[in-house]
Every structure is written in structure tokens, then in C-alpha cells.
Image 1 (cartoon, helix red, strand yellow):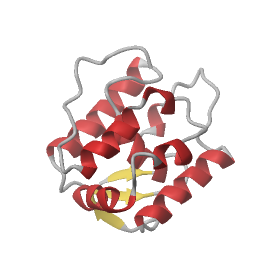
Image 2 (tube, helix red, strand yellow):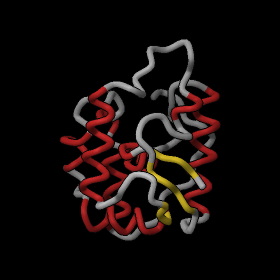
Image 3 (cartoon, rainbow, N blue to C red):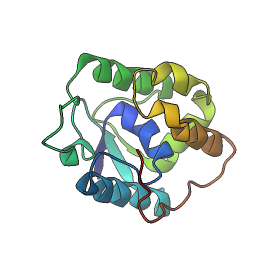
Image 4 (cartoon, helix red, strand yellow):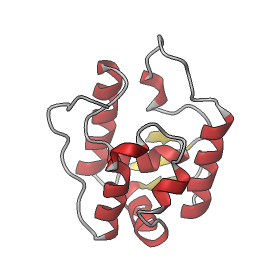
Length: 144
């Protein structure tokens, strides 16, 4: 079972191989590809750092416990009708995103996120809303 925090549900939709470090990208790609290939994978929503945060670079300022990030997590969970500590199948998360999140919501929910400007999370929400599969991660693009 994969442990995820609320806002990472949206980050995963926009993940295209870019990240904070090589180690972070390797981990994020593994999680993303597992969910992409097997949408019946169980996840559990957690408060605070999750399986993605575990590989955040130790030499960078940690933002995982900042209040703003926690508020973003709570907002995403509320919008999707998900609860902490209750396991859910990834395909159900995708169905909830398609039903409850509009691409323009990313601008509001993720307004303080440095990755929002790239538009990939918005693009991921659009794809899920159209019932499309998320793309395979290419050979770890750079620039994010």
C-alpha cells in the first residue's frame, strides 16, 4: 500500500519525470509508474510526510510540514471526499478527480506551489477528466 498526502494526488497526475533531485525522481517515477500500470493499487491518505516526501533532498529547505502544504492537503481531500487513514484504490481517486476537480482548480489549490507554472498538473487533471490514461514517464526529463 502506498502512503500519500492529499496534494500529492494532484502532483502525481502532473508528474513527467521532473523533480528536486535524482533520488527524488527515481522514487516518484516508481510510485507514478506503479499507479499508472496498476490502477487497482491501494493507497492510504496520510497527514504530513508520505512515501514521496521520504526522498525529498536533505540538503534543501524542508517544506513537508509547513502549514500551507497541510492546508493544500486538506483542501484536496475535502474536494475529493477522501479521508485520512482510509485505504482507497487509485482508480477510485482518478474517478473522484474526474468528477470533482476542474483543470482551473489547480490554479487555486496549487497557487503557492512552484511547479504550478509548468501546467503539467492542470494537464493531468484534463487527461483524467477526458478518461485518458496518464503518459509513461520518459527518460527523466530535466528542468523542474
